Length: 179
Image 1: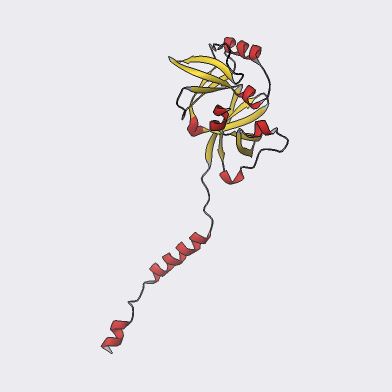
Image 2: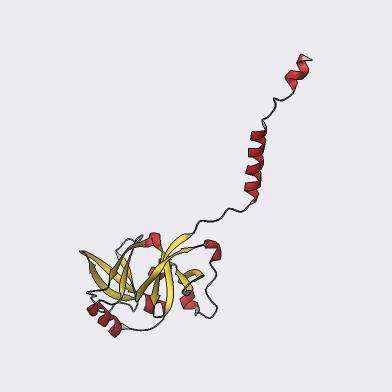
């Protein structure tokens, strides 16, 4: 009989069995993905967003210097507290509208904003009309860009999502900068 007792596994406490069962049940349930913060901004009446982690700073647009012969997507240079930042024209890159005269006016009167970006070799910024808000985006709720958007425009987006202000296009900054 002593040998029979030695062969049987030790009794497992109920608490350990319950913990194992809870872990198994949790493994079968999908984990909720963490929301990603995006800065929402406006170009005209349309709302767009960029990942907050790629934003270095938001500044009023002042002192924009044009670069002769620069491509349409390059608005000019801005001195941001001693750092020279290449300002990209989001409207021109996305094919929304030409606005050179309007941008010159905005730069002189302080309207519009420069979104200084991080994660690029050179100091870069994006010119936008105004700042909307910071949105917490659920990655599972991101949908492809609408089929009504021209392909040349849609290529610059990771997708779109619904926010309180409407449909927000989520920019792919790496593609936008290369464009």
